[in-house]
Length: 387
Ligand code: NAD
Image 1: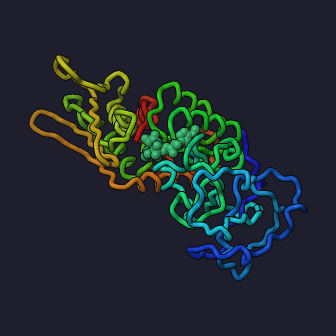
Image 2 (image 1 turned 90 degrees about the vertical axis):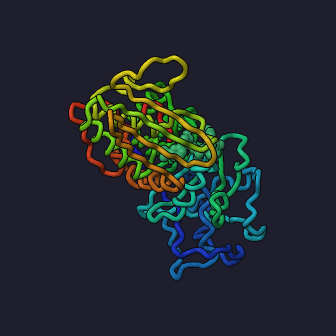
Image 3 (image 1 turned 120 degrees about the vertical axis):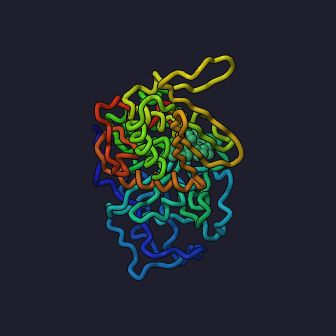
């Protein structure tokens, strides 16, 4: 396993609660040393937060660590400039990175996506965490935007870049809700730099899952098709119910998602299928029925069927149906806000920081007991992985 350098300097975190609007630059506390005196240190991913400018703490943040240059903020092409920042108060970086104060340095790849923006907001406000950077795909309109503005809060003085490599080198944990090919590339970087990688991306195929598995030999990777507490609890319940009920009970899994979702069945549906298969001690691959159309004949005993509905803005509904002659048990989870996934991802970030290399899932993060006597080797992430 590649080990991270624990002595890597830490970005300064504001000691005071920031005011809504940054005050003029002239009010900013002076950096401890002028930039030209800086030792040649690896440039940080970010220009540190401008928050302390507005309301300096009673005790200004000490700067024991060398003052280093920010990552070329002037060179960043601002596709969509940060509207919230008045020109005179353009996020002048307070170019300080200090020794680790224990805060976890987190970066977000795909930070302008639906999940990325929500994660930004939660992570910027999370105690014990400091956001050090965010990337987007080349050509994204978010390129160069300020991360804080992207999250709908005050500017952070950190711009969106496309340099994932620098993020993985600098951060303790990188959170990834992008797409399968990007995630595989990112997991390679996680392995290269020994950086923990929290992956929520769905729709990964077998080869992509295998590639992530290889990366997990060198980095801690948390991979979960669904990071909500409720769905992970549902998986436990489904596994238990499937264990109790004999195969005369037909298992069908129905999911519905918003019209933008690109993969089907959802990774959560597949993860629920895996849970049911674990309960029955069978391989999902052998019993899964992922589509039905035309003259397909009667249902096979022991099948686990999947149905995917798409429409509107449904965040994610999943029902596992156990159907027997004369009775039916249905277990449902309905997500009404993406925040449940983002909250789970924040838990995963806190948990993954400093973990040894390995492939983990949300049950590891949430501390659910693993009930898999004579199990079939599934890790509960679902063959296709998708929320
Ligand atoms: P989205 O399309 O809104 O966001 C994806 C973002 O990734 C986009 O902004 C895109 O530009 C960016 N991106 C693509 N390639 C990139 C690259 N190479 N580098 C950096 N950024 C890149 O999608 P979304 O709704 O936020 O979902 C993202 C993924 O997360 C999907 O696979 C989705 O199914 C999954 N998801 C998982 C959970 C969970 O709990 N695990 C919950 C919700 C969504």
